[in-house]
Length: 123
Image (cartoon, rainbow, N blue to C red; front, side, top):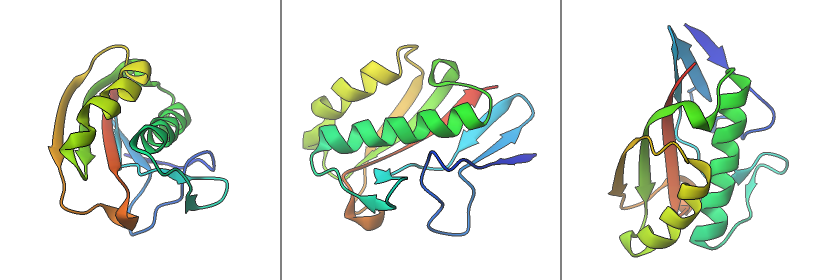
Protein backbone atom coordinates (compact mmCIF):
# COMPACT_ATOMS: atom_id res chain seq x y z
CA UNK A 1 0.00 0.00 0.00
CA UNK A 2 1.12 3.53 -0.74
CA UNK A 3 -0.11 6.77 0.76
CA UNK A 4 -1.05 9.60 -1.59
CA UNK A 5 -0.41 13.24 -0.76
CA UNK A 6 -0.68 16.41 -2.82
CA UNK A 7 -0.66 20.08 -1.89
CA UNK A 8 -3.26 20.61 -4.66
CA UNK A 9 -5.93 19.13 -2.38
CA UNK A 10 -6.78 19.91 1.25
CA UNK A 11 -4.66 18.39 3.95
CA UNK A 12 -6.39 15.77 6.06
CA UNK A 13 -8.20 17.30 9.03
CA UNK A 14 -7.87 14.09 11.02
CA UNK A 15 -5.79 10.91 11.31
CA UNK A 16 -6.21 9.73 7.71
CA UNK A 17 -4.62 10.03 4.26
CA UNK A 18 -5.91 11.83 1.20
CA UNK A 19 -5.85 8.46 -0.55
CA UNK A 20 -4.31 5.00 -0.48
CA UNK A 21 -3.12 3.02 -3.49
CA UNK A 22 -3.67 -0.68 -2.95
CA UNK A 23 -2.90 -3.00 -5.84
CA UNK A 24 -4.46 -1.54 -8.97
CA UNK A 25 -6.97 0.66 -7.13
CA UNK A 26 -6.96 4.06 -5.48
CA UNK A 27 -9.25 4.68 -2.51
CA UNK A 28 -9.73 8.36 -1.70
CA UNK A 29 -10.84 9.71 1.60
CA UNK A 30 -13.98 11.78 1.50
CA UNK A 31 -13.30 15.23 0.13
CA UNK A 32 -15.18 18.27 1.36
CA UNK A 33 -15.12 21.72 -0.29
CA UNK A 34 -12.01 23.07 1.39
CA UNK A 35 -9.94 25.34 -0.82
CA UNK A 36 -6.44 23.81 -0.58
CA UNK A 37 -4.79 27.20 -1.08
CA UNK A 38 -6.43 28.71 2.00
CA UNK A 39 -7.50 25.71 4.08
CA UNK A 40 -10.97 27.22 4.37
CA UNK A 41 -14.44 26.44 3.09
CA UNK A 42 -15.14 29.43 0.86
CA UNK A 43 -17.95 28.12 -1.36
CA UNK A 44 -21.48 28.70 -0.11
CA UNK A 45 -23.92 27.08 -2.54
CA UNK A 46 -24.27 23.38 -3.29
CA UNK A 47 -23.05 24.04 -6.83
CA UNK A 48 -19.94 25.89 -5.66
CA UNK A 49 -19.19 23.33 -2.97
CA UNK A 50 -19.69 20.41 -5.38
CA UNK A 51 -17.31 22.07 -7.85
CA UNK A 52 -14.59 22.40 -5.18
CA UNK A 53 -15.09 18.79 -4.04
CA UNK A 54 -14.69 17.53 -7.61
CA UNK A 55 -11.55 19.63 -8.11
CA UNK A 56 -10.11 18.24 -4.87
CA UNK A 57 -10.84 14.66 -5.94
CA UNK A 58 -9.33 15.32 -9.35
CA UNK A 59 -6.11 16.55 -7.71
CA UNK A 60 -5.87 13.56 -5.36
CA UNK A 61 -6.46 11.06 -8.16
CA UNK A 62 -3.91 12.77 -10.40
CA UNK A 63 -1.36 12.62 -7.57
CA UNK A 64 -2.07 8.88 -7.37
CA UNK A 65 -1.44 8.48 -11.11
CA UNK A 66 -5.04 8.11 -12.24
CA UNK A 67 -8.03 10.29 -13.08
CA UNK A 68 -11.74 10.84 -12.59
CA UNK A 69 -12.31 8.95 -15.86
CA UNK A 70 -11.06 5.79 -14.14
CA UNK A 71 -13.46 6.09 -11.21
CA UNK A 72 -15.35 2.84 -10.66
CA UNK A 73 -17.36 3.76 -7.54
CA UNK A 74 -18.26 6.93 -5.69
CA UNK A 75 -20.02 7.49 -2.42
CA UNK A 76 -21.68 10.88 -2.10
CA UNK A 77 -22.96 12.47 1.08
CA UNK A 78 -25.38 15.39 0.98
CA UNK A 79 -26.52 17.30 4.03
CA UNK A 80 -29.85 17.93 2.29
CA UNK A 81 -31.38 15.67 -0.38
CA UNK A 82 -33.18 18.73 -1.78
CA UNK A 83 -29.74 19.53 -3.27
CA UNK A 84 -29.68 16.24 -5.23
CA UNK A 85 -30.44 17.70 -8.69
CA UNK A 86 -28.04 20.63 -8.33
CA UNK A 87 -25.31 18.30 -7.07
CA UNK A 88 -25.91 15.91 -9.99
CA UNK A 89 -25.51 18.72 -12.51
CA UNK A 90 -21.98 19.45 -11.27
CA UNK A 91 -21.09 15.80 -10.64
CA UNK A 92 -22.07 14.82 -14.21
CA UNK A 93 -19.53 17.28 -15.68
CA UNK A 94 -16.67 15.62 -13.79
CA UNK A 95 -17.67 11.95 -13.66
CA UNK A 96 -18.35 11.45 -17.35
CA UNK A 97 -17.68 7.71 -17.17
CA UNK A 98 -20.72 7.32 -14.91
CA UNK A 99 -19.16 5.13 -12.19
CA UNK A 100 -21.30 3.09 -9.83
CA UNK A 101 -22.53 5.38 -7.08
CA UNK A 102 -24.28 5.64 -3.76
CA UNK A 103 -25.72 8.96 -2.61
CA UNK A 104 -27.02 9.35 0.90
CA UNK A 105 -28.21 12.11 3.18
CA UNK A 106 -26.00 12.78 6.17
CA UNK A 107 -27.33 14.60 9.19
CA UNK A 108 -24.16 16.66 9.45
CA UNK A 109 -20.86 16.72 7.56
CA UNK A 110 -17.46 17.97 8.74
CA UNK A 111 -17.24 21.76 9.01
CA UNK A 112 -21.00 21.87 8.32
CA UNK A 113 -20.47 21.59 4.55
CA UNK A 114 -23.22 20.60 2.14
CA UNK A 115 -21.41 17.78 0.32
CA UNK A 116 -18.66 15.17 0.66
CA UNK A 117 -17.56 12.60 -1.94
CA UNK A 118 -15.17 9.66 -1.88
CA UNK A 119 -13.93 7.68 -4.88
CA UNK A 120 -12.53 4.28 -5.75
CA UNK A 121 -10.64 4.43 -9.03
CA UNK A 122 -8.60 2.07 -11.16
CA UNK A 123 -4.91 2.99 -11.30
